[in-house]
Image 1 (tube, rainbow, N blue to C red):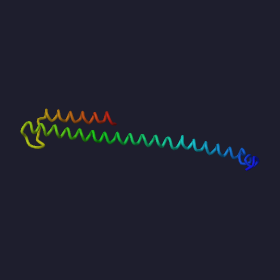
Image 2: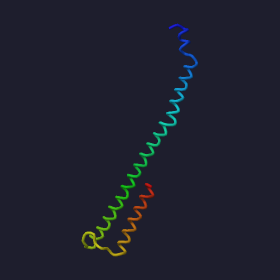
Image 3: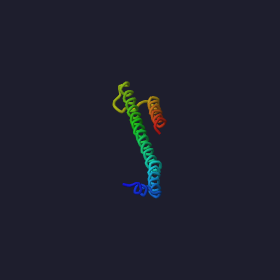
Length: 107
């Protein structure tokens, strides 16, 4: 390739096209790809948070059932017994506090 041919291949129009392509690529990266990656990461965090919240609420329910049944057993009563209002209110209050803690932590 001669010098004249090389000079012809690098005309200003070609340089402008190359610059436009590079600018387009950078624009696409900055305003399409990067925000989408950020959105995907935020959605993963939110999904994990929702899973932890659901697990926390389930754990609160298990604790509630366990406390209730333990109190029934301690009093020599059968499964899913009727507890005194005072004891039932304490267990219900504890359950409500556990659920509120889940909301505070994960919502």
